Length: 188
Image (tube, rainbow, N blue to C red; front, side, top):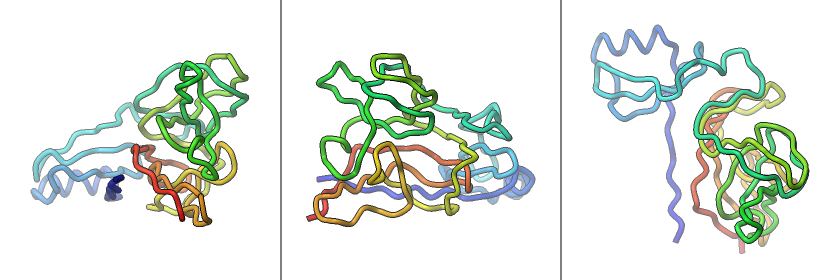
């Protein structure tokens, strides 16, 4: 049985977070999105925090990602920012997801960090933060595998036989926290 877990991310600025830390007002183990630096931090104690995605490379840089990355082989033509799954029966080549079928919605997921054609190298984000200036998410929205190949959406699929699989949340209109779990549900 799949278990869905909700991740709460508190939005703040660096100055506000520093003020909270100075007054012992942080929440230990809470995740904070620092909007002016476009990075994530986690509360360690009520008065300390640490950046978990550091380097601030997302600030002002389109198509940049920070987190756990990997290099694989594309199983078909993919574009930067498209959502893919590993087809383990093809030596883990990466194909575009599609919430219309179980076969294209389960297993390891990743986001393409470069364009690639079938059989060629593709850099992928397995877990982390990504920015894409073409996105226009609702801040805080849960994201799911989309019904169009390679896409993700704020609207959970709802038709019979569709697969509902959360893949992350929108931190900003153009920035997501990509945290795909292994859980999914088929609509009956």
